Image 1 (tube, chains in turn blue, red):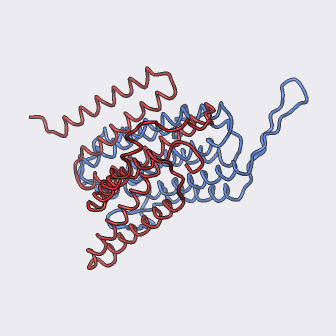
Image 2 (cartoon, each protein chain N blue to C red):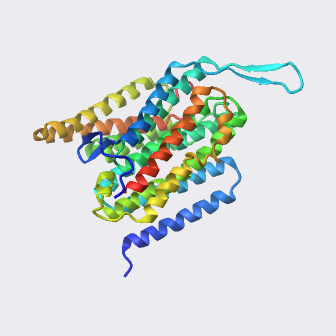
Image 3 (cartoon, each protein chain N blue to C red):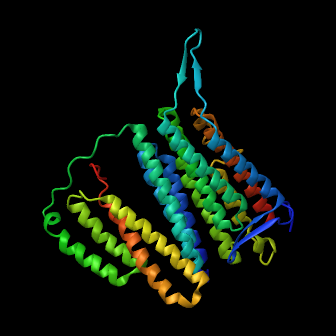
Length: 217
Length: 199
């Protein structure tokens, strides 16, 4: 069993469901924690569009109610990402991954721009369809091995089918995780820097984590 | 002899293929949103096929994630298409004037006898029908508060299971009653979803 994450630093047990932190996942967890704190503290950017060929410019104001909602969604996204980093249960991981998908839509949903909403809607449909391979992969792993615990699967009691791993990875890719941004690239046009960047960061972290899971189990 | 699980898996994959094909062909935004439901149901079928207690417990979070995605996307669709006009007056059907009281009472009483998840669903159905048929100028904060507190009681029951297992019967009763109120309260809100001041 390849141990790419290193040995466990901390294990939090809830019965047979546990959260574990290796040096690898701890790094990702701390990154998500720091960025969530930054998003709580910082104010949103004031985006400025310059009219081509002239001196005119448009400053886009962010209303307080919109900012509050987006900050809430950003914090939720940060919490879901942190949960996914430490989770030692494949189904919990898939739930956290789809929660990150929902909050990513939420972060840009408050922006009253038709273009951004269109992009968010299209991404949301892809993310919703991606729950099929995501949960399907977890269910296949449960059906063939009888457990969802990552440490138990890593111990190698029974082999995890390749199709299960492939479906899991496909599901995460479908949720729009880095580097497969195709579905949600347009969403990043939404103004409000610290919040939109959370979409990027959470996707990147989730992808790094699923790579670790797929190699470990 | 092919095992049942493989046959089920085959059917689920076929259904998923059909759903993906339909999504590929459909271009209208709202219809595509409705078609994603087809995919969601197959997702739940994948989990249900495992057929163990654990799989049964996993269906609920899977369903909740699916429903919350559906609600979020519906809201985005409503905003982006600019549908802000409140819906017109309710249905004008005679049976909806006379029947709600007795039907709702029967369903609620039967639901309380059943208790638990299924009881909550049955009683909730009665309350949905009542709110759907009658006007609903009620204090919905009360329903939501009751729902919130009963959820807390449900969690308390789980802690009793884990920390004081000798009091399991008390915890079972607490969880059964709390989830009844919780499911019923949440479901009853569906009956009021037709615009208006309190909805």
